[in-house]
Length: 298
Image (cartoon, rainbow, N blue to C red; front, top):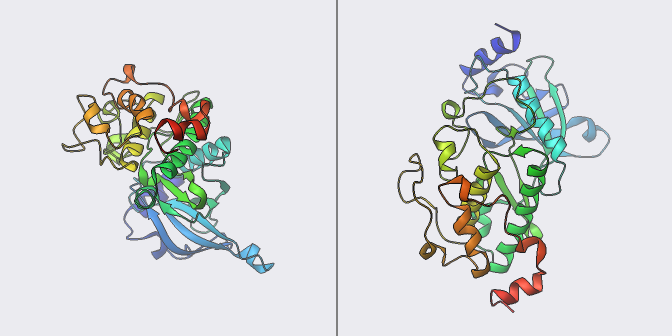
């Protein structure tokens, strides 16, 4: 067993990574402060960059480290480095920005340093947004999704918890940990069902069935996320673990602006062959004034 796999096995039986000696500060630089997010694969902590702090620049960052549930056979260093590479490649104003990747010298734990975002998760923010503001947020998400797809990257887990909405209706897409590179394979095998590498409430039916995520499955997840953002509830009435077998009907699209309903109807089709390849064209080709006039807001 490789050294990294041995470390992964050790981590898997601990209640919390911070219970290990020396893990509260990584490489004598990043002092972990508070857990701000976690999933089946990783945890995200707010942290202080002590090196910047020494020079009077109190810089708070986010640090992503493996969770206690990482399995022994997983190459955790390669897993996190793959996400770091994705974030560097994406480099888009509506995607979280990666600052550094490293491995702690003492514990050998790999980690990604990212910008620390202020704002609220999408559904919390959407409850207080007007239709006009929801359209603005949707446009920014559509732009970043189009961008990552143009790079041959599939996010593979677009859902409201991976979206932060900030002031000015800005939006940031997070967590590329299970992303798929259509141009090259990862240096390790990712069993998506075993590690619950997607949220079944927003995952496309074929992904729930065990197929590899594609651009079309990202489109489904984006539509499912925006469907809920616009106040239509979740797309699933049955168990989220049961793949959607029939398309969403027009009768359930009443909360969606009329100019967008056809796109949602197609994007939420259970058959990926019938879904569009891109988010709504109106976000790119129609001026805001014309779009708002079309849906009766001007």
